[in-house]
Length: 115
Length: 277
Image (cartoon, rainbow over all chains, first blue to last red; front, side):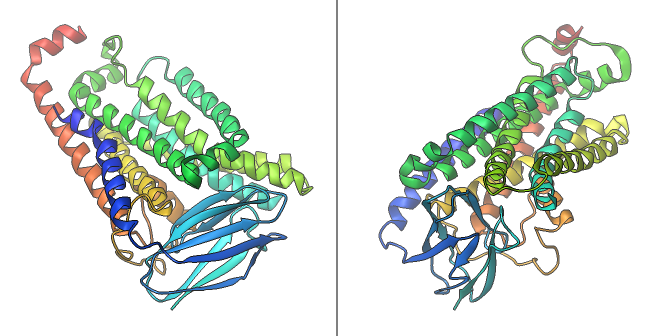
């Protein structure tokens, strides 16, 4: 019956995921770096290539956790104090995409310039 | 204080909307209040544990632990909602009869409560763990009136949830479970799409290209209506194709499952009467 198909859904997704990484793993995405210092992003504007998936390494040098978030390129990841996290971004069309620190939005604001 | 209230509100809102839909969908089920509170309690407890173990979770799967964990929690919720709506489709008539006061007993072991309590717990756990980590940071940074901020955010989020709940109760009984089932399907589709986003973020899944459409200028996801629609129907201003695909697959699969379950329950009216009477 149908419930069984539905119960298999995550397995299907997991399979697709594994298959996809095998294929995509051929070319490693270029790495870009971002730091969080005193609840601000450094650099506040990061330039990445258009139509390309990139590997974004975000280092939180503050003593408090931060959540890297963007509604414009759909990402959210908590970065614990004094640690780094990796977020894959794109491919994106050329343009400006804002991101922010959800836990300190008053200061932690940045822009991803895709060109 | 206002910053705390605002963030807490955003996180609570997501969980509160899910709790409201579940509360409406379990209308008339015995012990539903206790069950919902148990779900919320388990979620709060889980949120604390997840926040405490955040560094360990983050280190799993060579740094993709947070994404895999979130995707796992979301997909688990999707499966439970799937189970529930399909179960409901095969018991729809019996349930609406019971709510109308006819007083059928729910067959032991098939009550839809258990799975939906888990959905509530998972929603509270996910949003709650973010609140815990955020508050930890705020307290370490010496924020003023964190308790007031927390209270205000909680109250405001719960108020929006209550608004949705009492709005849903106004739906005529004839259409009630049809409506809550439809809401649950859309909720599940949105959660499945969110799960894909996490897997793409961890590079475990391809985005399948550039975003499908861009309606950010029309409806910002960060705005209150945008956020509510994101939770309720999975609205995303710039969805990656894989997100849209997951949304569609979930709606189609659950729709088909409900249809088949509904049809087979109609085919055996005597069996059902025995079971429910």
